Image 1 (cartoon, one colour):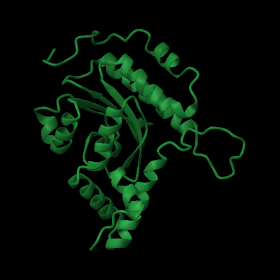
Image 2 (cartoon, helix red, strand yellow):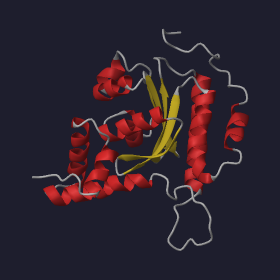
Image 3 (cartoon, rainbow, N blue to C red):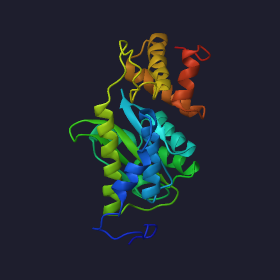
Image 4 (tube, helix red, strand yellow):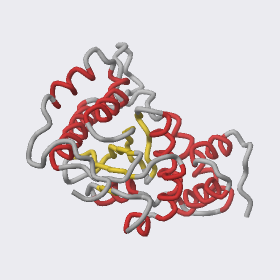
Length: 246
C-alpha cells in the first residue's frame, strides 16, 4: 500500500451491500433528483469527499447534479479550463484516477487544474465515463480531500454507480415541445443554465468573427484570467453586461 492510500477493504473483495445502498439511496426520488442522489450514495460508499455528474455537450461539461457545493465548484473549474481529467475522459472514454494533485505526474499533466483544485480543498480526483464503451456521454467525477487511490472493489462500486447513471440517461429522453402529459423527464431543466455557455459562445463568434472552438477558448481564457467560471461569465455575456471586442 502506497502512502496516502485508503486502507479500507481488500483487493478482490466486493464491498458488501453496495447494490442495496444504491437502491435505497434513490428510493422515492423524482427523476430530476437522481443524479444528486447517486452522487451522495457514491460519497457514502467510497473513500471520497464529494461527487458530481455531468453530461458533455460540445466540449463543455453540463452539470446534472452534485453532492456538495465543493463538488459543483470544482466541476465548474474543469469546465472553465477545458483541460482537466473530465475532458480527457470525455474524449477517450477512459477513466482517470488522479491520485495526487499535490505532487508527481498528475500535477505535471494538469498543472493549472491541480492548483485550482487543491486551492478548493481537493487532493485527488477520479473521473469515470458515462457511456456504453463506444460513446462517452458524460462523466462521474469523484473528489477526495487527501491523496490516495481506489482499491479494485471500490473502483467496481464507482463503475456500478456510473453504469446506473448511464442507464438512466439513455432510458429517459429530453422533453419535447409536444410533451403535455405532465411527465418529468431526466433532462428537463437539468443543466439548463449551461445553455448560456452555448449562447455566449455564439455571441462571441459574432463579435470577434471567430469559429466555435476559438470563441469557447476565448470565453474560458477570459473567465480564468478574471477568477470566474465560464458559466458565470457566459451569463454576463448573454445579458450584455460583458462584450468581447476585436
